Length: 108
Image 1 (cartoon, rainbow, N blue to C red):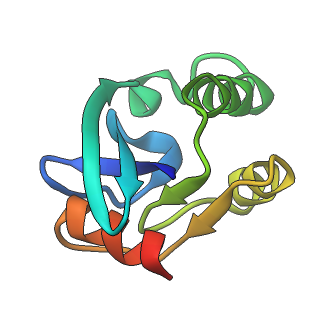
Image 2 (image 1 turned 180 degrees about the horizontal axis):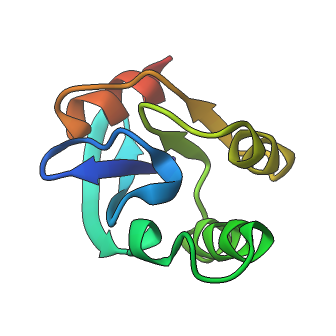
């Protein structure tokens, strides 16, 4: 399974659409087999252009990475609806260590 988690350092980032970094994790048999941090700069880019352009930027990233699960603390309703339409499972209210949050969400 490929998961994407919002980051603030090594912790789960608070807001999905405004984080600067995310990690893409591959999870197999309850273990993280790959962990890659991406500088997405969504916080910086959020207010450049329209909301639709920002959502498209996020969708493009998720599709390019083959993401099946998104883990974050908070996400706006528009993003939540859009990601759900892609068939990607979203786990909200995650907090603490990002790797632990991904493993918990992937197991649930």
